[in-house]
Length: 150
Image (cartoon, rainbow, N blue to C red; front, side, top):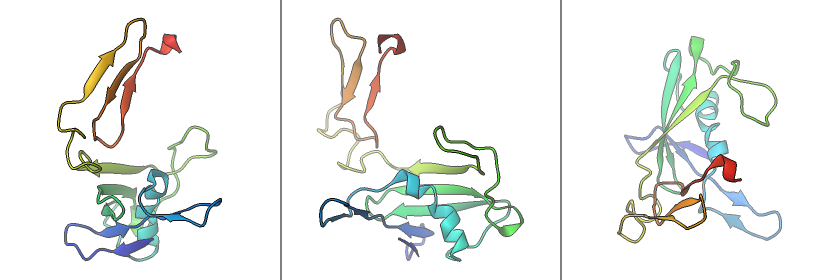
């Protein structure tokens, strides 16, 4: 769901709802990055924001999480361009790229970079090439491992 934002530092508010197909449930807690990539072009097509030259930068707020994202959309001749060579593995065809710049995501779930207010613990377990870092709130948990160990 998209709307013009009342906040001066935000262009578009994006509100995501995930409907369960098994239960009578609508979840409003998460957001969806795949759908987020369509927010900029949709906002332009819906007339919620005007194109700004060959490239339009749109300040999007995820209402669900409060995250701020800058969507960068190709808009030559004042309209969204869907033609291009950008590809996503596993998806047929290509299109114009859409860039998403995530702003201030550290602490979006817990209020700080470290969920327990201490630096993330990174372990190297004996006889394992898996390095795990946990308790960090930086939008995504990270793991490093050797490819030849898979």
